[in-house]
Length: 340
Image 1: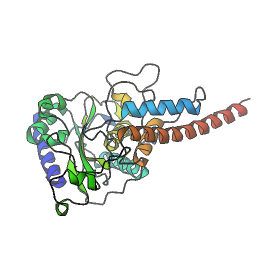
Image 2: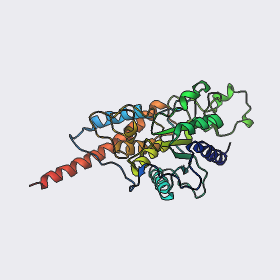
Image 3: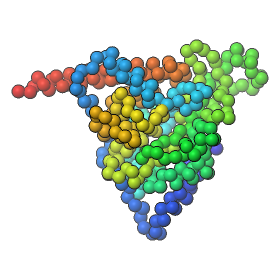
């Protein structure tokens, strides 16, 4: 099914589920309980004690292993976008609010090196603000469950359950550059029928595409194909639009393993975890760790096996944070030197 068709169906289903709100005819939609505010950049680094590069490297490796989710266990790779990210937003009464969130996603996508989406692009990130999120997900599960992503059908009820104020569901795909001679020996397909590259939607009933076999690389690429993000308007009451936008950015551009649990480095997604992280303030937006992770994720080899991906992303993330830590420490020392 095409993305445009999915978008049309999704819009129709959202409208149908929103009927449960029973809003009187002729009245404007209620204002979502998020406060408008200028988009943030990245929360500043707070320097307490200078960290050694070795400590930062260890923290970065820990962050990657705890954060990075892998959608398809048969491929076991970290998914990311290859196509331009094209977001569409429903449920906000002001077009300016939706425009700010879309612009934030576009800026971050461009910052990590993704190609820009063209005007009139087919949405592959659907973002919905609603005060009936579970009603919406029940409708999604009933009308076109593939949007829930890779899972076994016995887990439908578990997967469709809304558990957080902002939550995402990921559709992923696996792409292969082709096959090698060794694989052809065990394949029933003649060479003329095997394309030089193939892309298959991740599903327990779909075998992965044929690809070369190598000790360090699978010659596969795990890609994000669609992300559905649902924001609970009631639960977000009092939150600024910039904070909400930053959390959506992180979910739109990466697939976290979990939305709960406190990583060794803070992330904007901690703000909406079921319990607060002890010993630190809730993030006010994207953190240095978030920005470093996204940058490292999109600069890593897309065909590496998970262990190789973890190491490469952790190394690149540490380089970014080590540099940022050094700059922040130098600035703090300069400020101290000027203090009378």
